[in-house]
Amino acid sequence: MKVTHFLIAALLTMFSSNVRGDYYTSIVSLIDLLEAEMQVIGFLEQYMEAMEEISRKANETLSELAYASQEADEDPEEYYENPLNAYKIISRFVIDWKKLNETVFDGTHAAAYTANLTELDSKEGYTAPTQEDLKGASKGLARLQRTYQLATIDVAEGDLKEMNYGQNFSTSECYWLGRSLYEAGDFKYASEWLIQARIRLAEELRASNDVPEFKEIITDVQVLELLAAALFYLGKSNLASFFNDEILAQEPTNENALKNQLLYLNKAHAERNAVRVVDEANNYLQRTELDELFDQTCNGDRQQTPREKRNLRCRYVHNNVPFCRLAPFKKEELSHDPPIAYYHETIYDNEMARIINATEHMVERSMVGDSKQSGYSEVRTSQNTWLNLTENAFLHKIAQRLRDVTGLSLESGESLQVANYGIGGHYGAHYDFSEEDDPDEDYDGQGNRLLTALFYINEVELGGGTAFPYLRLLAPPIRGSMIVWYNLHKSLELDYRTKHGGCPVLVGSKWICNEWFHIVGQEFNRPCGLEQDGYKSLPWKGLH
Ligand SMILES: *[C@@H]1O[C@H](CO)[C@@H](O)[C@H](O)[C@H]1NC(C)=O
Ligand SMILES: *[C@@H]1O[C@H](CO)[C@@H](O)[C@H](O)[C@H]1NC(C)=O
Ligand SMILES: *[C@@H]1O[C@H](CO)[C@@H](O)[C@H](O)[C@H]1NC(C)=O
Ligand SMILES: *[C@@H]1O[C@H](CO)[C@@H](O)[C@H](O)[C@H]1NC(C)=O
Ligand SMILES: *[C@@H]1O[C@H](CO)[C@@H](O)[C@H](O)[C@H]1NC(C)=O
Ligand SMILES: *[C@@H]1O[C@H](CO)[C@@H](O)[C@H](O)[C@H]1NC(C)=O
Image (cartoon, rainbow, N blue to C red):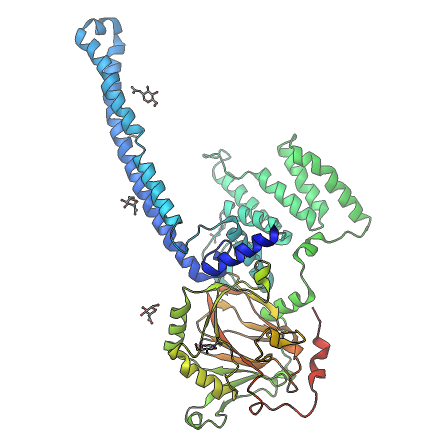
C-alpha cells in the first residue's frame, strides 16, 4: 500500500513541476506562487467590491423601510386606519422585502469568486501550497539557523548575519513556525520560536491595555502547551514542568496540563537523580558527527590551517591549448591532494542567462540516488534538470572549455545538470562517485565519476558555498567561476576525502550547473598512476 503510494507520488513528480511540499526548494516556484497570490487578491477585490455594492443597495432600501415602519410605530392604530398605509405595509412585504431578499441572497458573486479560484487551482503546473510546504519551509529556516548559528531572537526580527531585512515576525508567524518545527521533531528551534511567540503575545496584550479588541487567535495557553512539550522532549523536564504550572495557573482545570504534570515532574526527578535519560530530541533529528563537521565548514568555524594554505597559488594556465595561450584560464588552487581548484570567469554572462532561461521552467525536485522509489530525500532540497551538451548548440563552446580546462574527453560525460536552490536549500555531504562494486551498473558502462566540474551561474547574496568537511574547505559561490575536483585517485580508487555538499542558501537563490566526467575514454588523458594510491583516503572511508 505504502509502496504504491510512493510510486505514484514519484511518478506525479516527474510530470509536474510544483508538487506537494516542493515550494520551499526553489525560488522559481515561489515566483509562480507570487503570481497566483496576486491573482487571488484580484479575485477577492472584485468579490468585495460586489459585496460593497450589495451592502450599499441593501442599506438604501433598509433606510426607506425603517423610516416607514418608524412612522407607523408612533401610533399604529391610527396609522393603519388609513387604507393607503394598510396597502403599503402589505406591498412592502410582497415587493420591497422580497427585492431586498434578492439583493442580499444574490449568490452570483460568490459563485464567480469560487469559479475564479477553481480555475486557478486547475491551472497546469500550479498546486496551492500545503501543510507539507509549510513544514518544508520551517525546516529550511531551522537548517539555516543551525548551520550558520543564527539566534532565533535575531531571525525573528529579520536579522540574518548582521544584515537586517526588516521582516519582523508576528505572534502568529512565530507560533506556527514553532508548531511546524515541533511536528517535524526539531524541538530545540521549536521551543525558541515558541518563546518568541510568547514575548510578542505579551507585548500585544500590553499594547491593547489588557483588553484585546479582537478575540486573539492564539492564546498564551496554546503556546505554553507546545513549549512545555518541546522542552520535555529536549530533556529539560524542569522547565517543561515550570511552564506546565503556568498553564495551570491560567486554567486550573486544563486537562492536558493536569495529565502532563505528573509526567514532567517524574522525569525531572529522574534527571536530578542522574538516571541516564535518552536524548530523544537528537535521536529524532538523527544528526551525525559529519553533519556537525559539515555545518562548521559552512559557517567558517572549520578552516584550512595556514600551513595547508601555504602552497596554494593563483595563476594563469593554458594546459597547452593554443587558444588558451592567448586567453589563459584563471586558476585558484584550493587543495593539491586531492586536486581541487577554482577556474574563474570560465562561463560568460550570456551563457549563464541562457542556461537559466532554458531551464527555469523545467526544474524538478532533485532526487538523490535511488530515492525515486522511496519518496524524496531530506538530504537534498533543490530542483534540477538536465541539458544535453550535444543537442543544445549554445553549450558547444562550454563543452570545449570543459575539455580544455580538464584535459579530459567528454565522450563518457553526462548531460549538464542544472539546479536551483531556494530558502535553506542545500545538499547534504555526499560523494559524487558510486560506491557500488560495479559502478558500470549505475553509469551505463561509462565507469565511475572521475571528475566534477561545477559552475556557479548566479550571484548568491549569502551562503550557498560548496563545503568539503574532511578537507576543512569551503568554496563560496562566485558567479562565472567553476570548481573542479577529482573524485578518484590516480589509481581510480575512490577518494573518500572528496565528500562534499552544498551549504544552505541564506539569502537569495542559487543556480549551479555541473558536468560529470567518467572514466571511459580518459586512458591517455589521465593515465593511471604507477602505484595504488587509494590508501591515502582510506581513513575517511565509512566516517559519518
Ligand atoms: C472571474 O471570473 C469572471 C467570469 O468567470 C470574470 O468575468 C472575472 O473577470 C474574473 N475575475 C478576475 C479578477 O479575473
Ligand atoms: C446606511 O445608511 C445610513 C443613512 O442613509 C447611513 O447613516 C449609514 O452609515 C449607512 N450604513 C452603511 C453600512 O453604509
Ligand atoms: C426572505 O428570505 C428568507 C430566507 O430565504 C425567507 O425565509 C423569507 O420568507 C423571505 N422573505 C420575503 C419577504 O420574501
Ligand atoms: C519586532 O517586534 C517585537 C515584538 O513586537 C518588538 O519588541 C521589536 O522591537 C520589533 N523589532 C523591530 C526591529 O521592529
Ligand atoms: C528565453 O526562452 C524563451 C523560450 O523558452 C525564448 O522565447 C526567449 O527569447 C528566451 N529569452 C532569452 C533572453 O534568451
Ligand atoms: C545527448 O544527445 C545525443 C544525441 O541525441 C545522444 O547521442 C547522447 O547519448 C546524449 N547524451 C546524453 C548524456 O544523454
